Image (cartoon, rainbow, N blue to C red; front, side, top):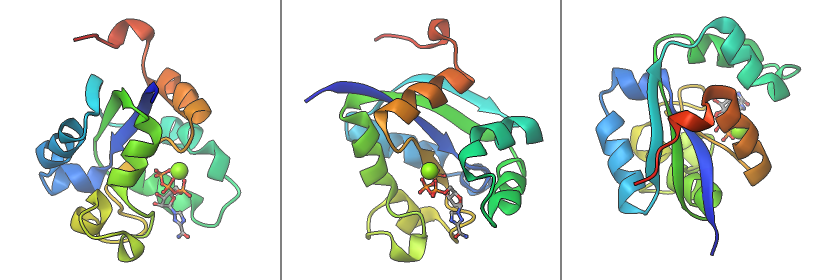
Length: 141
Ligand code: RTP
Ligand code: MG
């Protein structure tokens, strides 16, 4: 088992529903420790840059608009197999298809407002963490 870091974002719907604490509790309970956290209103450019891989997709405009519709919580999670462990806790992209007990099944309304983002590979995790955090903002405890 490898100790990894992954980027987690609680999307604007998660803040508006006041489930930030419940979501972070689920991470901590599964051994995913928040080693950096910041509440931030993303700019359009920041959101477009973050999701640049999807820029040619039909849903890109809506995705960016949703991501800047309110503040988000940016987090670095650290733990064993953090990338996959986080994706398992999140559930499928479309909450209607997400397994019961996952964050998206329990809190998300739609494929657009799906409450959380999580890096989908170790390589992407490294890039996404560096997109939002300096190494000095990541703590050990
Ligand atoms: P995320 O990047 O936000 O963690 O989500 P994901 O890996 O599960 O899904 P991804 O394919 O990376 O898509 C990014 C976000 O775009 C929206 N989306 N809409 N209407 C659609 O078909 C569609 N497909 C994707 C979702 O909000 C998804 O989280
Ligand atoms: Mg993704």
